[in-house]
Image 1 (cartoon, helix red, strand yellow):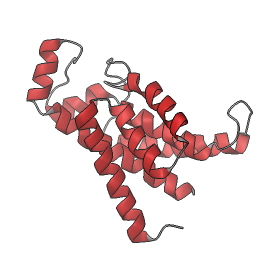
Image 2 (image 1 turned 30 degrees about the vertical axis):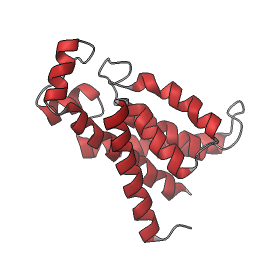
Image 3 (image 1 turned 135 degrees about the vertical axis):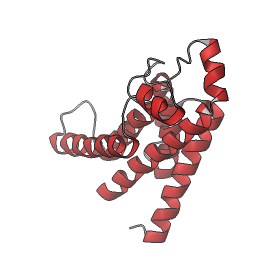
Length: 170
């Protein structure tokens, strides 16, 4: 069992690393999931690499569509990694229900704390407008508006929320 100070230090580290990965890599889903998976030992290195590759297209609100926040989706993926320990090819009803309930808690908490779950809306509120970063001009305006700094804080918060839920379930 992790003590309260150790728990806070772990949560701070996950939030800080997720935000830094986002600033460096500009891939919100991958950044949140990497901080969670590496710091919480959610899987072996090969599995982590595979899920990180799978999380790359979550960026920009699912493949740049500005829909659901990639960091939120990555947190849900991390909960699945943490709570479903049996074979994913079998119907482990108890694990599946627990993972679904924990993921719903993350979704609702994220929505409550950030006001939205869609990348478009989160950016609109946090940056004053949304940006279509698939357009080079919009990408430049996004950067100039502090988009990467803003999104890194969202990624850090999402990773921290997911970590808190994972720790509660352990």
